[in-house]
Length: 349
Ligand SMILES: Cc1cc2nc3c(=O)[nH]c(=O)nc-3n(C[C@H](O)[C@H](O)[C@H](O)COP(=O)(O)OP(=O)(O)OC[C@H]3O[C@@H](n4cnc5c(N)ncnc54)[C@H](O)[C@@H]3O)c2cc1C
Image (cartoon, rainbow, N blue to C red; front, side):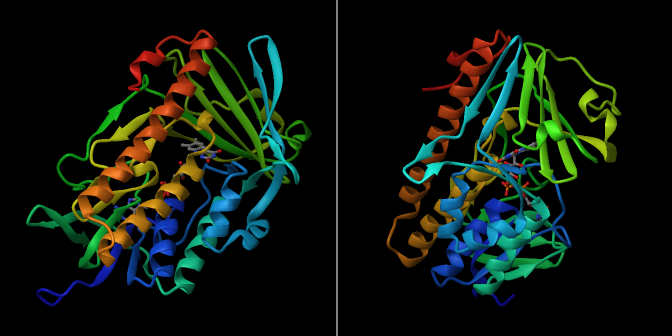
């Protein structure tokens, strides 16, 4: 690295949907972009049921036409069985007809976005782990990685749910729900009940989500709402006739908001900025949109069209409004069902 010369305009840390959306948007605006991803190749992981709204964001990113190639099935809504009641919640419709959600392979979906970024000239570094931030004069000027130091005018953190060690001072998160741990797993075989639409079933003690990822592959996610713990090999009885694929795994899905969403030279996007539990049904949509919007603002700052502090404040306000509104809706959903600990008044207006 030459003294005084920045390696790129924008560094994006993380190659999930949020990072790719940011990289694509910045590269399409003509900026020099580096994307750093710690994995060698993208793997399948949860986040496979996509809200119909992703299609219009993917159009803006230039990849909507590639979505069918990574889509395993489509569904018009979710079946909800809660306590003794059962209902079908449709996604909605417009003049063209009912909207449908997408079941995607995340390895395929994430790779589709990364390929688009590469086509637009983004320099991708795989097997490259960001260890800490480089800071000078009160701003973020780059990152220290397993492949050396790299500098940029703006750094976008898209590292997902778990903050990377060395993410810098003030990167803590504030929780807005009781601790929520999701357990999830996969099974292969045939489960016709799930072929038409995913099922969310539960009661005041917890919920279980089951869905077909693609014909022959099914996924479940379970969250306890009463603090109870399952054995680590627990699987839903519905999956008894399927062949387990891998061991069940766990993820912390406690609702939380970062305390460092934007500052000089720095934006956080996707789960790095805000996490809600999967019943919100829009984690990937939120990741794509936040990546796109943060990158547009970073481009405006770099071109001189926007003042950095105002761009940061605008982004923080948009993201926190969305987070709190979604958290209030989820709080009402849980408290209407008699679940303790989800008082809407805990969420700021
Ligand atoms: C059990 C479960 C079920 C879910 N189901 C759904 C669902 O059905 N629908 C939905 O929309 N959402 C769902 N979600 C949420 C969804 O998975 C996330 O909101 C979404 O993946 C966030 O995207 P992201 O790009 O912010 O982060 P991620 O997809 O997590 O990507 C982050 C990337 O950053 C990389 N990275 C991390 N640290 C570093 C580092 N230090 N250096 C370099 N690279 C790094 C990681 O390897 C990863 O590729 C679910 C979540 C869970 C836990």
